[in-house]
Length: 79
Image (cartoon, rainbow, N blue to C red; front, side, top):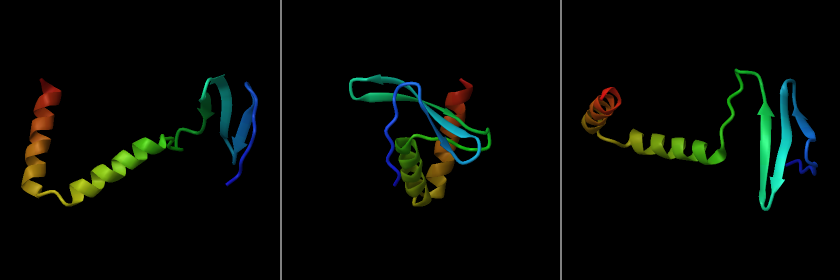
């Protein structure tokens, strides 16, 4: 793992076309701006963890229940 220290307004460049800028530092939080090509997905780690967990649960779910859930979801979206 590479560990860097940056000041407000400074950038970090990753490979070709990915740039991370320090936008704001406040209390224990850092606000980052990320510029990347459109084909590079950017996700927060907790979102990836939730998707993995959802997929793990879905892979062990009864298909009939899954179809019913999809039907209810479609009704909810269309209402």
